[in-house]
Length: 332
Ligand SMILES: [Zn+2]
Ligand SMILES: [Zn+2]
Image (cartoon, rainbow, N blue to C red; front, side):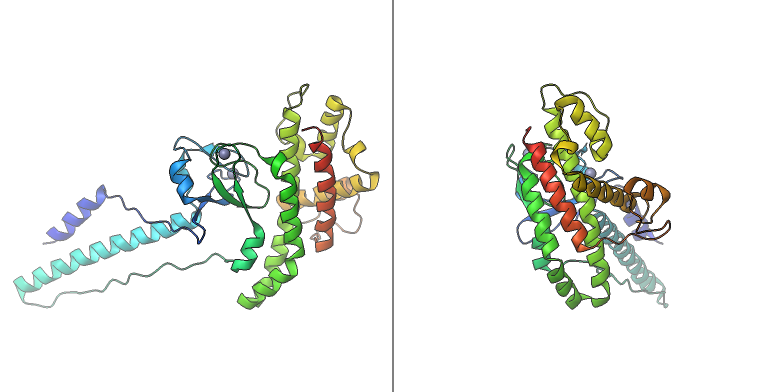
């Protein structure tokens, strides 16, 4: 009794299942950074993944951390794979049980429990942007060092194949993509409304709120790259260039220039406010606290309110960052 089933279960102990991962219409496959604080999703060209990328190290375009090539499956791919594996196992057990039943019935000529296994397809749960919207967001990059092709959304400057920091070459292109993104918000909203009207407003707000973080990351990445290559650069702490006052000090000490000379006083005050807003979004779900009011001098909010970032804010933030970035680029 149950020989078939036992044999099937034993064979499963060492079983490995592999599932194909589909590429998009341009031949790119999805990847996700394994760093728990990052989980950045990007795409790499399927052919380059095979021919250029190395098994020992793949780099995250956003945080720059590296890990072996077998750790970059996306959460969706892992979940879909698990579900397919479970369904396969269920189907195998089901088949083995049915085989047992047939034998049992043949031997005993009595009824036996039969059951049907239903193998479900997996549901697509991620919100997919319509194709035209996706094109506005995605930046396709070919690494000038190793030729690997990859695609990112937002500020991501490290080549996933060789780790090269391309921020000085990509900075203005990144600003252009961000501006295109901002000026297309209304169009995107219309497109999204055709898919799901209720979600359109929420998604647009989420999209706007990704921009401050992208802008801060872009300046940080560019500053690190340019600063480290100065002949008289000093060592600096991680995230120094994420904080305006710390970066001003470091630039002043090293080149006697800084935000104080590169920007007008008014621009610097606004920049500080937007940096504080990004900080709130990243660490406090956008809820205003004492620290925000003290550091930003923004009296339009009270503690406990949620900040609202509109299109005009990100347009202005982007303009100041563009100016600052191009001043920094003069030292590259
Ligand atoms: Zn990462
Ligand atoms: Zn590269």
